[in-house]
Image 1 (tube, rainbow, N blue to C red):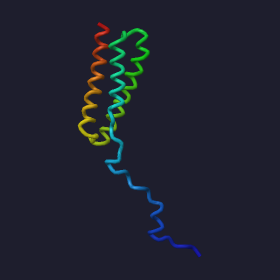
Image 2: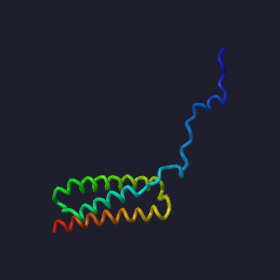
Image 3: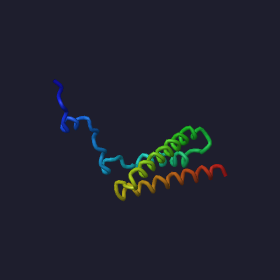
Image 4: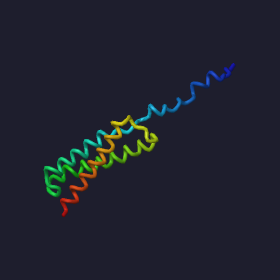
Length: 109
């Protein structure tokens, strides 16, 4: 004859619980800071509109993409980051982006 499933048997088919909020991925601004720092160094020591553009344009594009990704993580994590050092890296990364854009603007003038 057939076996009757009890509530203990159905526990195998239940999905695992969602991860705890602390275990969720937190934003890390160190990669973005490095990308914008490298772009600023290239813009400082090279010309903005020469063959150096082959180096700083991809750095800026990947940096902006990484910034968008990190902001999405930050919004999803409800503004929870790893502490004051992470907030300092956030400020420095955005300052690096601002400096790179200002240097590009000054190169056009």
